[in-house]
Figure 1 (cartoon, rainbow, N blue to C red):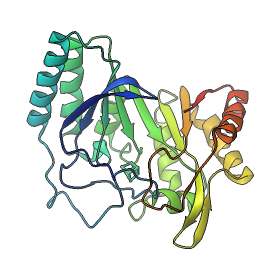
Figure 2 (cartoon, rainbow, N blue to C red):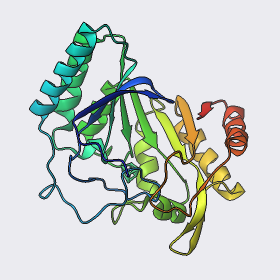
Figure 3 (cartoon, rainbow, N blue to C red):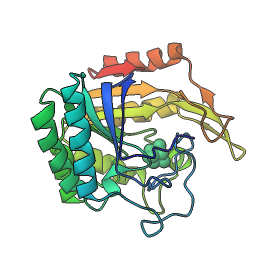
Length: 256
Ligand code: SF4
C-alpha cells in the first residue's frame, strides 16, 4: 500500500508524465476518496471523513510547493510536470480552486515550461468552480475504467448514488480538452469475476470515447500489488490491441 505522507513528493520519473513533482492534497494519515477502486494503490478506503483526516490548508500547500520549486530551480533540476495525485481524489479538497491558482502562479515563477497535471476521477465536475479550475490546468487526466454501469460499480465502487452516466456527463463538459486514462484488469473480487477487457466492454468504452473525444487516451494495467491479489495484469500485447482500436477511431493513444 502506498500512502504519501507529505504534501509534496518526488520528483519521480513517471512513465506517463516524465519528471513529475507530486502534490498530495489529501491526508497524510489516510485515504480520502469518493471511489474505492479495487486496484487502488493507496489500499481500500475505510470509514473516514474530512473530520477525522488531516487535510493540508491552501497556505500550507503554497508554502511547501514554493520552497520545493525554489530548491529544485536553484539546483538546476529538470521538471516536466507538477502533478496532483496522492491519497485520494484531489478535487474533493475544499480549497481546491485556490490551490490550483497558487500552483499555476508558482509554476509560472519557477518552471514556466512545466505542465500542471491533475489526476482525477471526474466525479466533482458538476461543480462549476472545480470544472473551471481543472480547465485552467494544462492536463486534466480523467478516469474512465468502464462505460458499463455494472462494471463501473464493481471496479470503482463509487460513493452511493454516483453512476457512470454522471461521469460521462462530466467528461462531456470538457469538450475534448482532457486526457483520459483507463485501467484494464480482470480477476475475481469477492467471488465475482470482473473483466473490463471483454468485447462488450471495449465496444461500449469506444462508443463513449467517440462521444467525449479526449485529446489522448492512456491505457495501462496493474503495476503494483493491488488490494485484491487475485487481480491479473493484462499483458501488453492485449493492451496494444485495444490501443489499435482507439487509433482506428482517430484518437491518440498510449499503452503504458
Ligand atoms: S479514484 Fe484513485 S485514489 Fe480514489 S479509490 Fe480510485 S484509484 Fe484510489
